[in-house]
Amino acid sequence: MNDPPERSNDAFETKAIHAGEEPDLGPGGTGDLVSPIHLSSTFAMDEAGDPSHGYKYSRLGNPTRAALERRVATLSDADHAMTFASGMAAISTTCLSVLDSGDHVVAFDGVYGGTKVFFDDYLAEHFDVSVEYVDATDADAVAAAVTPETTLFWMESPTNPLLKLCDIGAIAGIADRHDVLLAVDNTFATPYFQRPLSLGADVSVHSTTKYLNGHTDSIGGAVVTNDDALAERVRFVQEYALGATMPPFDCYLVLRGSKTLPLRMRQHEANAKRVAGYLSEHGNVTAVHYPGLDAHPQHELAARQMDGFGGVVSFEIAGGAAEARAFVESLDLFTLAVSLGSVESLIEHPASMSASYVPEEERLASGITDSLIRAPIGTENADDLIADLEQGLRHL
Ligand SMILES: *Cc1c(COP(=O)(O)O)cnc(C)c1O
Image (cartoon, rainbow, N blue to C red):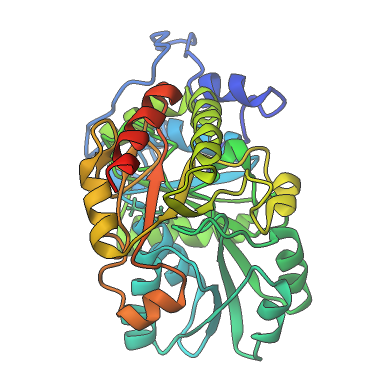
C-alpha cells in the first residue's frame, strides 16, 4: 500500500518534480535527489518474516517502483497508484481484478484497439464476460445499456483516433445509481489535463508509454484509485497472480520523464492548436478532429471537463487510401509510426496501420475512413511542423 500522497497541496508542476523523490537525509540515507534504480530481485531480511525495510522480492515491491507510484498517485490526486509492464497489463489486470464470469461490461465504442481485443477475443471468449459497445458521447446511451449483470463501465476520453469525449461526471452519476464501477482510460489527456477520479470515476488507467514517460524509450502502464479495497485487490492480482509489474529501469525513466509532463503538455497543446488551425483552412483537408477547435462537436464539454485539449490531431484529406498513404510517406519531419505522446511528432494512417486488423465494414462504421490520418503533435517548433505538412499537402 502506498504512503499517503506526498506534496498533495503543491501545484502540479511542483508535484511533478518532487513527489516520490524526497531526498533521504535520515540515518543511512544518501541524499540522492534522483531515485536510485534498485535492480535487486530479492532483498536481504533482518529477521525471518516481514523485514523492517518492507521489501522481500521485487515483484512484490521495489523501492524505485514505490517512488514512481507515489509520483503518479500524487499527480492523479489519488490515494493509490500501481505501475505495470505496459498499458495493456494495467488494463487487463484491472479488469481481471473486478470482473467475474457472467458479468456485463458497457464500453465506449471508441476504446483503444488493444482494449477491444482483450474484451472480445479474451474476456468474452474465455471468461463468459459480455461487452456491449455504445456511443458514450451520449451518456443516456450508457444508461440504456445497463442490465442487471452490468458491473463495469469502461470509458476513455478523448478517444483514439477520432478524439471523441464522454461526460465523465454524468457517467459517474449513472454508475453510482446502478452500483456499477466506472473505469476511465486517461492516456490521451494525462493527469495534467484531466483527473477522472476527481470527476467521479472509481479507477483510472494510463499507458505511461505515451505522455507520462514522453520520450519513446519505455513501455509501461499505471492504475490509480481512491478506493482502498479496489487498490488492494488490483495490487494482489498484479503482484501475486499476474505479475505484470513495471521493471525498475522503466520506473526510473518514467520518474525522469514525468518531471517535464506539464512543460511538454503545454507545448504539445500549443503546437496541436496551431496545426489544427492550419489544417482547418487547407483546401486539401476535408475534416479536422481536435477538441480544441470551436467546430469540434464536444468543444464545450472539453473546455469544462479538461484543463487543456491535448496534443493529438486527426484529419481527413481529399482522396482515398492511396492518397492518404502517399501523404504520410511524403513527410520528412513527422515520423511514420504508431504510438503517440512523445516529444517527436508522429504520423500514421489508421486504416492501414493501427486499425488494419479491424474488419473494413466495422472500421468504416466507427468513422475510421480510408482518408483518416492521425498526427500526435510533438514539441518541435510549430512552424517547422506546418512547413512539413504544407509540402506534403501541396503534392496531393
Ligand atoms: C497505447 C495505449 C494503450 C496501451 O498501452 P501499451 O503501453 O501500449 O500497452 C491503452 N490505451 C490507450 C488510450 C493507448 O493509447
